[in-house]
Image: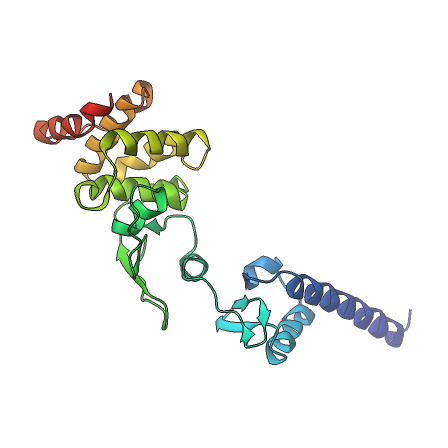
Length: 241
């Protein structure tokens, strides 16, 4: 095979690869595209991404991350703040905190104007996105256990229960039970992550699991050294037992 034939075969392959990528990108509005989505992208795919950006089919957020919104008469729709945060931070090890955690789990009707997100590393808020990051770098179990956002929200809400949860304890526990039954929350995964959580959260997680009839899982949560925390946690969830 001559060099000319090899060249044209490679060019045909590159054109086909670029065309496949263009069709994938343009047929999926309202999502982020990352270089990682391409699984070792070829030079042809990288060039095609640049062409799509130049043509207005993608918006570059930062190096290697692009937004494909729905096209409207006024331009491309902006990304939802939650989608932006998840794309920038990643899902594993990050999730809603404080009032955002309670809203995520349906334990409160108050949706904060500024989303609060717990992350495993220090993050700075991107411009034009109403978000505040809180660092939980010592709580490495969340990343190791690959907690999902709702599972992180559960740990966070246990830390701020008195000021963020609007429901009665009985209603809140019933809601958490429903989330587990629908597999939004996996208690076993949360328990695996709990070893690096503060004593207050561990004590409340044990008490919550006991109130849900999950005694075996509760026994796997490391006890708080302070008896006071254990007693207060049992008092908090006593009505739901």
